[in-house]
Length: 139
Length: 414
Picture (cartoon, chains in turn green, purple):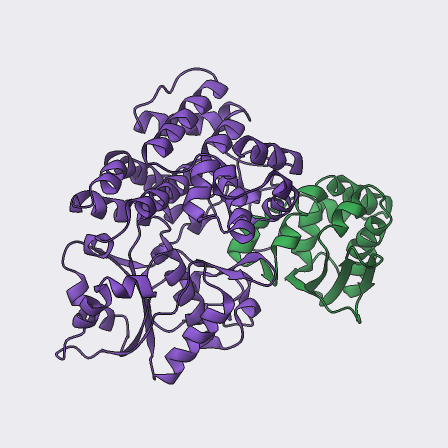
């Protein structure tokens, strides 16, 4: 059984994490160096988060339908995304096993992976603050 | 826990013991020995080839090797040469890949045979994707993104048959699942990689490297050494990968210098083909490291040949990684033992010993030892760091590497 019951839960937790990151004065300038638009296409439940991290435009996060044209598309189950943000997924292994699929200039996203490690405890704290410690425990 | 997930949490590189997870893949049928080129048709027919486009470059063709390959398709086997595409440049690009795939369609080929070095083989590997699935090379950029059954989660859809006869002993591309192609406008190299891209057949015949210039034999040999060392030390090391990597190092130890200095030493050339073929195997587990991360942008921005870039970067990377502590240094100790070097001492000492051995080897082979010797300017370092940070190999280095670390490594190598 999937961790999230519907797409709104995906947006409430993972989507909110991205929205918060857009406001992070320390991390966002580093993310914008990726100079790309990435779309996270989730399954189970179907949901989409599109993130603009470009140097020539303001950061933007779209939850669901978007007018942004993604350059990189990362596909995975919402469960895998959830476990990633808890620091429980080795991206290299996940790519090799097909748990994550990457299309486009993936290097632009791979270089962000070490940068997001400080975000893992933030996601955990966010879930617990929302009374969803069950999502932390279940994973 | 979702199906396929492993362990409770991923906590970082696991450099010893029974690993939580690894995957090792080696599906290419390898045949090695003497006189194999004359039976290439007989062997390739077993892989489903019927009409073959031979992919090569003008230099290789001028040696007469392609004539011998064509003679390997006699009338008594049910496969023939449909055409020859000899327009592959050094550091092949997307336009060449498209031209190659188009040539295959136009001549009615059902299979490709690459005869050449890394650029030729990677061209053929990407062209076979376009030939089979259509599109443009960058449409397929990325890792494990080729079409699969079951809505992308099932068995990879097979590509048309591909065989490789390597004419250099270094890249090991004849037995890897990745191809690297240059985007000349964007000044980047991009990877197309999936298990379906493993060639079906690799033919390792020292006759194919008989005319290899010593400088290229040296540079490609150092590429093989880099694959082997990084394959054993990577965070994604595993016993299968190390078995291949360490045997490759034994062969390199015993044959590299002879293969470079004595082109008539057929045994040495043949053993270096085996070494390169073995050394690439760890990449099936993503076992590689930041010598490659540092080298890829040098090729993309400044056309530094990959083997030379690796030869320059490797010793600095060994010292950097070994400084990360005993678990990493212990993996270098294994290598030092095989190479007959001092394997005791501190982590820093064991790294320095191996690094000095690599530097000595590079000098003996007559290769450049500094980036400044191969046209890399100091003011290019910021661009190079950007590329190295975003390289897929960076994620699997045993020691985490920051932008500042990359900048320092480039400065050291300059």
